Amino acid sequence: MSSKSLLTAILAIALVPAAMAAGSPSTSRPPAAPKAQPSDYELGVKAVQARDFQRALPLLQKVTLAEPRNADAWNYLGFSQRQLKHFDQSLAAYQKALALNPDHRGANEYLGELYLELGNPDKAREQLAKLQSLCPKGCPEYDDLSKAVGAFQATQKK
Image: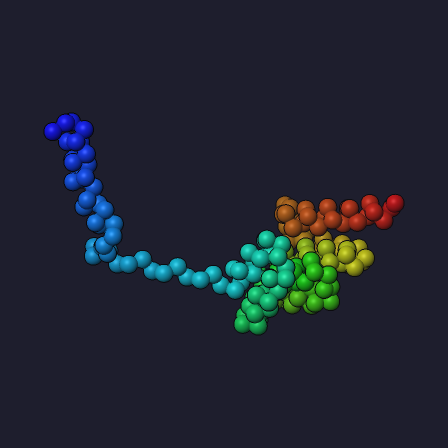
């Protein structure tokens, strides 16, 4: 027998148990639990992150119906509505989020941005002041709204 044939035979013998084990159920450990389906909230957030606001709306509406005290869901719902230019619904959703959690930094930022879109920089500055009190050392929400207010003011001076 050639050394090549001998090597092939040894490999075949060594690999047969591994191949058989791969196709048979293991009795030494329980089967893996099936992966849980993402929640409507998680799917809604992913849709927002993908900028698919039409897909996010019904998911987040479903969450706010099932969990009316979920300030984060109201905030994302307001954000999605604002991106779709549904300003009245956006305002209502942000107000609901802030009624549930007045210190919600995201809702304060986004409400300020909505006020800018509506041409009300004074109300936007109120939200900026609220964020400044929530983040005395700074935070991304304050920084983002501050930049938006500055950009709005710059366009008004032209």
